[in-house]
Image (cartoon, rainbow, N blue to C red; front, side, top):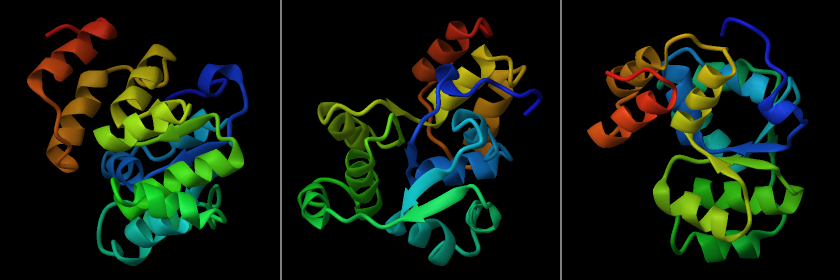
Length: 177
């Protein structure tokens, strides 16, 4: 990350993040991008995400970075009935992310899975995924070349991006192929 940003939209945010975003950004050495979005405030993750990334994923990308960060805070979801309802359609981590976001009145939820994003939006939450974060970083001048990061996501993180989305994203930031 080359320069400091004002944060996402210049305002302080409560941000809740899912494991896929943490793992993907760690895989391409861009986890610190989340600090810029949070304006150097804490990023919150529920216990299920911590377990998935750090405990169960101890030998995979993101585990050491998340465990060592002082700015990623684990927060327990109090309202377990929402989790029980959501987990009928989503995985446990995604369900806890959405439940925690609702509890904390989060301004932004970071999710990559399409179904989880749709649920979150239906519940009135603002949602971004890994690619959306990278687009924001490019538009803010934090990164110079989005294509490099999209390619790295696919090669290093095994991130699936359709050719149509790939071209659309690059066109949006004036990096047409």
